[in-house]
Length: 305
Image (cartoon, rainbow, N blue to C red; front, side):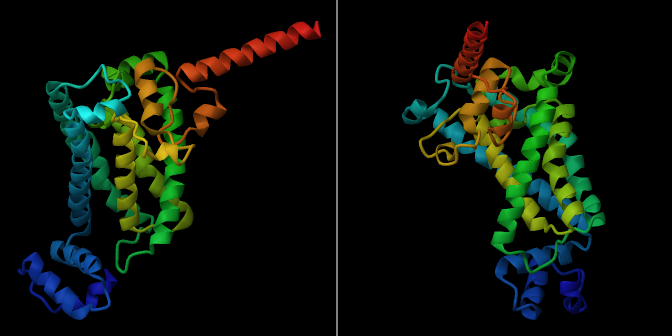
């Protein structure tokens, strides 16, 4: 990493992390504190793949389980039950514990390899993991593009997984809970985890291949927001302040809850447009619109005769 080459010769490799951080801070005064923490971590580890792998996995676990905790607490507070989409199906503590155990096993067996191999693959395509960091505007634009890319991948592969044999062999496990809850966002078979995970990890790699411009911090911000989206969509809660009420194309919990309750339709992850354009929306309102459309077509055919 070129940004610390001038510093690398000034400290002994036996120094602890905070000793390295002190040296980085001394010789790189132009960096902000977070950038110094980042630079010191890579210098301390002396192995970029290992440094990225450990940081990525820990970030994933902290964000995933940390985001689920508020919803677990709300399940126990009656005040929030009025926002629950299926209040008659509150998850039990045992259900959540069993789900968490399976998800944790999946994280180590199915997701860890993807996380670990991301760095060498992304490095091959030219990912930037140095400092200073990109601007917030640049990160925001990139993340918006990644949301659209992943949503497209997710819609088509998710829809394929509802094809008879594939559903029974791969996707049925994810539909164990007809009333989903946050922890169930990544409750899936290893094959499904890897297939749909390719959209989350593969979209940034494809973006990097096309543009030649992606920073690892942007990748982390993308993963964090995508985890928030997935957990919120599975939370079973639709609040007045939920994003879908301010951004109509956003899917939200009500969109995905219908999918789990009815086992069909609403295949997209983040947005509603694929289901709208391809007439795969689920729920009573979507059924009513399809029925009205069919009746209107029948009436127009009768008038033409």
